[in-house]
Every structure is written in C-alpha cells, then in structure tokens.
Length: 487
Image 1: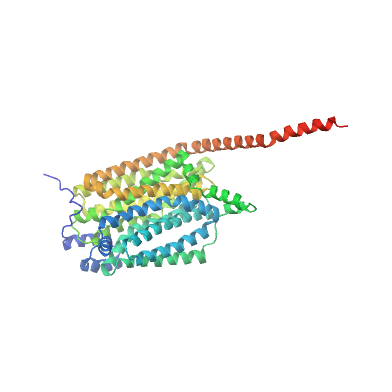
Image 2: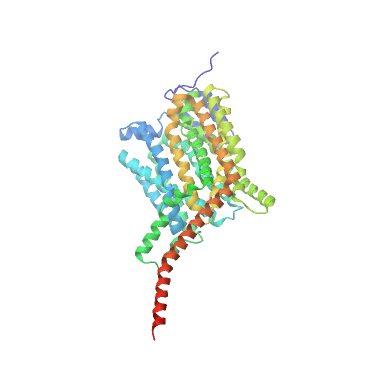
C-alpha cells in the first residue's frame, strides 16, 4: 500500500462542500460571528488572490510580484541598524513620529501605485520605515518597565507583531473577494494613521538620557564627527563580538525562520492537500497560529517574568541570562514537535484538518513564550544600549526571515514539506542549544569582553596622557633649569 504524496503546489483540485465545512467547523465553531462572515465569502468567491491580481494589473507575473515579499523582509532586516542608534541619540518619540508619518505616506503611495516600479518602491519603503515601530516599541518597554515586569509588557507588544501576519491573509482574502486589492493598503494607511496620531497625543518621550544632549557646546565639525560615531551602524555590528549576543540572535532567527517558512506556503501546501480551491479557504488556516499568538499574549510574557523572580529568590540577585530558562522548553520541545508533526502529517496525509489546526495553534502559542524571553533579554543584558542590542537582534532575525520566504516554496517543491519541516526542526534545536549556552556562559562572556574593552580604553587613555604630558614636562624642566641660571 502506497502512502499518498503531497500534490504539486501548482495543482489545486476542486474542493467539495464537505471539506469546506470541515475547515470552517474546525476553525470557527467557537466563533459564530466570524463563521457568519466566512461562510458566504467562501461560497461566493471565484476571484484569484491579491498577488495574481497585482500581477495582472501591472502586466507581469506572480513570481515577480512575490519577489517583493522577500525584499520586504530584507529591508526589515537592514533598517534596524539605522533606527536603533537614531532612537538612542534623538529619543523614541521624534523617531516614531517621523517614521509613522512616512509609513502613512508610503502606504498611500502603494495604494495609488500607477505601475510596478512605484508599487515596489513604496512597498519596500514601508518595510524600511515599519521596523522603527518594532525597535522603538521594545525600547519604550525597556524605558518604563522594571526588569522583573518587562516580559509581560514585551508579550503584549510582541502579540501585535505576530498576530498581524497570521490574521492578515484571512482579512486580505475577504477584501480581495469583495473588492480591489488596493483596499488592503488603504486599510493599512488608516491603521498606521491612527497609530501615528496616537503617538502624537499619547506617547511622551520615555528615554532617560538622549545622546544628543551630550554634544551641547560642541563646535559644528566636532558635533558632526561625534554624531557620525553615534549613528554609525558599525557600532551595532560590533555587538556581535559578544558570543551571547550572536547566539541569542541565532535563536531568534530560528523562530522567525520557522514562522515565515510555515506562514508563507500555507495556501500552496494545504490547498492541494485538502482539495481547497480559493485563497480564502487556505487563508482560514492562518487563523490557527493567529489564535495561538493571541492566547500566548496573556501568559508568555508573565511566565518569563515569573522565572526571573524565581531565580532572584534562589540567587538573591538578578542575572539577565536567567530569563532565558523560560524559553527553553517551548523552543526546544513544543515548537520543534509541532513543526515535525505538521510537516510529515501533511506530507503523508495523516490526521487531516483537525491535527493540522492543533499543531499550528500550539506552535503559535509557544512562540509567545519564546519571543518575550529573548526580546527582554536583549533589553536587560546591556544597560543603556537596549535599542541597539534589540536592533542587532531584529536585523539578524529578519534577514533569516527573508531567506525563509525566498527558499521555502522551491524547497517544498523539491524535497517536500516533510523534509523541509525536518530542516526547520533542526534549526530550532540549534537555536535551543544556543540559548542554553548563553544561559551557562553568557555572564562569563560579557564580563570577559567588557574587561577587554576597559583595558583598551585604559591603554588608550594612558597613551594619550603620555603624548600630552610628556613634551610639556620636558619643556617645563628645561625652563626650570634656565630660570635657576638667571641672576
């Protein structure tokens, strides 16, 4: 007896009403209000998803339009090294207002884009600006929360960054079912406009000390050189000399790799497996991890803070690495287990829709136990440099997210969803090992690197004193000799 293989991604068999009903029942039985909206949308939709619509309007192919998705994450990965230092120098509020206003303008540009070039430009500009909210949000939490409470705040904040990608495809499916794809970007414009207005009226400056204040009294050229040093992205890249910074960055990257390698191909993988024909039907599956992220909001960050307090009672002192213990069981067991079950059960057609929904929900829930722990560790580990540390971490994770988005569909076409999920599982286990090594040796590594930096500064200072005072002392001695020879 042969095991049924996963249909090719390009194949989309016709869905029967019973299968569609099973999708709806599995996902929406507890939510009759959503069920009432989803049923007519699925029954009436005959339209193609937004990407083909964009491609058709601009006279290109879906592959070309999909390229912007990977480039979007690439720009998200590059921009943190700009916004992190800027927020440390000028503060959280002005950077949030400038980038928020720019995001609104770029969203309008995307909605009105007359050609493919304009569409690409404005989409990538929103990616470049949008990361500022992620960095400043995390930095604000560092500014206003105690270390033992930051996990809870970070959990609520992270839920917004994760729920959006999960619920977005479903909402987008509803929009393209009944109207134009441009409405998606008008909705984005409205939401970002509300957020920017909220920042203006409700968000005070939270940073304790702006670096720009240290430059009062500097001349124009001196101030320019000092600003260049403060804003130089190399300052963030140098943080990777700390092994714990690099390893926790890899752990965060493994989570984002997992997130995008699952979310990106859901429709292409599950539609043919479960014989679904429309983008909205596949889009329903995005709600499973979305509800997991939502549920994790209430408990993930609180659990991270609880673990910190447990170890404070044990040690009598707070060590930033102790927080990472809260992520280990979820990063090393729950998420890898969910991913491997998802991949091979879909590949071999075992468990059907209910099992798929359950494991997608569980891995989404578990991510909200990991991200608050890792993000808050970045805020805690280097006092006064939280925005820069989190910027480097975001840069690393979104570059891996870009890679996942770019390779996942070709890889699944080549090796199948089961083997690709196995690769993702090993990636997650590698992230778990990196996290554990950071717990064991993080403080030791930090102390060693900090001691090396202090030694370099001391030697530089001593050399400067020698260069400054040596000639002066020699001259003074000569002057004294001359003065003594005078009558």
